[in-house]
Image (cartoon, rainbow, N blue to C red):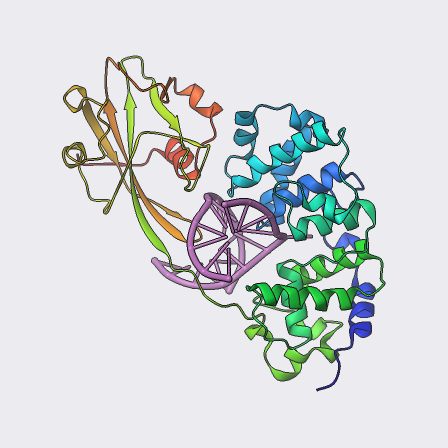
Length: 361
DNA sequence: TAGCCGTGGAA
DNA sequence: TTTCCAAGGCT
């Protein structure tokens, strides 16, 4: 088998690239803070989904020092709805490291950046090249796909050795080219031409040397192993209000989804088909919640919430507890309008927005 | 290392 | 309806 022609690859990509093909507010920006912020927001996230969040964060926190000084809950609220909330927690941690341990300046090397919480190999390479012109190539989902196809390489991308292999390929592809432009070009190319499902091979400048194209493997590449099993879970939220119409919420702290987000009292069961009478008899019914003082008033239609590896069916049971007392300190009693100030999982904000048809009790 | 962590859009 | 997956990182 003949050698892969990286010179052709590099030139084709460079000639194809035009910054304005895919305009983004942070493109061409040299500010490490804004580049870092955009890269964290865009991890596993589409540009269209992340863009409004970027605008809001920059407006709320113009500098890394502003962000570092922000309260945790405020940052979580601003991140609400974007998912992968560990990114928000690490964002704040990293901002405080930069502000307090680096005098407000971002590290200007790959290794220095890599040491920040939430900054992995991809993000470190992105910031190092875009902000500091360091000669490092990014390896993201686009790069895996493009290289696997161009080289006709069926090495699985989701293993340690696989990542190492593709890192070597992208290093060879970059060569001594200017890294910032190369990295921007290869990611734009992956988003606009060499796309996962409908690649624009007829207009691809690399098609003549693309092995996947020649061998009819475009959509078999890249190769991924193990597809995750999906787990089904069933959540029953107790939407309890007192005589003044105040709600009971608490913050999730477990090693589970939605850590540091707020929710109503929750019972997790093996089915969605449970009435209040059945819920009250369960072992995990909160002992501080006196069933005899509660008046259940409604049950929402089920909400289906799809996560990457979990499917969560959710029902909201509304109940009155006129004289709330002896509530554990972890629980807050808040007015309806105050609810807006807390970061909530999407399934709960959807419930609050739609409050869909109530089923029979 | 493998499993886990959200959400929304497209097909 | 289901599946895939999008500028990944942590444990």
